[in-house]
Every structure is written in C-alpha cells, then in structure tokens.
Amino acid sequence: MFRAKVFGGVLAALLMAGPALAVELVMVEQVGCAWCARWNEEIAPAYPKTDEGRFAPLRRVDLRKMPEDLEVSRRVTFTPTFLLVEAGREITRMEGYPGEDFFWPILNQMLTDHTDFAPAGTEGNG
Image 1 (cartoon, one colour):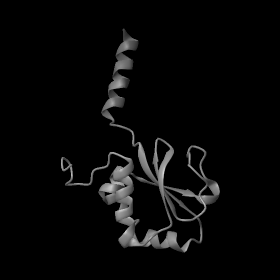
Image 2 (cartoon, helix red, strand yellow):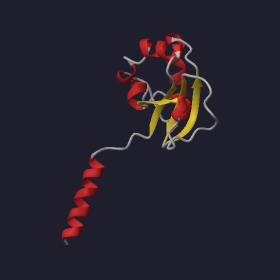
Image 3 (cartoon, one colour):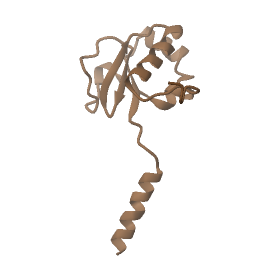
Image 4 (spheres, helix red, strand yellow):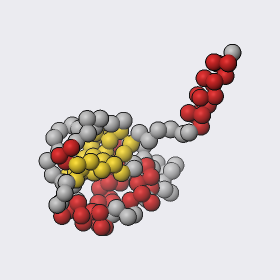
C-alpha cells in the first residue's frame, strides 16, 4: 500500500511539472566566429523573450565538441549553424546567420513547417 502511494505521488509530481521541452534550437558556434558574435549582439538578448525562444529554447554547442546526444542529419561545417532539434534529433537547419531582418522570418518558417509552433495571435487562424 505504501509503495503504491509513493509511486502515485511521484507520478503526480512528474505530471504536474509539465511536458519536457521537446524542441530546441541548437546553435553550433566556435571561438572567433564573427557571424556568431553578430548573432549574439543582434538576436541573443531578445531570443528567450520571443514566442520562438519560449517554444524552442536555445542550446549552444561548440563545433569542435559536438555532443554525443545530438543526432545531426549531416556534418556541421559552418558557424553559426542553427539546428532545429526535437528529442535530440535534427529536423531542419539554417546554415549561417543571414542578418537580423532575415533570421526571424526564416526561423519562424522552420518552426511552422516542422513543428506544431503557432506564433501568438495565430491560434485558430488556419
């Protein structure tokens, strides 16, 4: 009886914690990358405050130290490369940083094409 109560309590706590973040934006970067620095200056401060950033939190990885838990569709060659990842597996990518004016629309398109992302104000408009 005690085990069942403990298990039930643990299960309830896990369920109340909310769903795990399944989608993330992985930024592959390297030291000395001028375009990475530009992205850091123009986009990084705002990213976590946006719908996109809340839906796909940013994870940074070094090009020379790619983590084993990250499954990419092909080798990453350029920095920055932005990998849209779900459950540790790449689903699409943006190679390079196209500048602030193009980054947001491209990212938004990646998210809407490959995930269930719906920008604020578009729920039910489809």
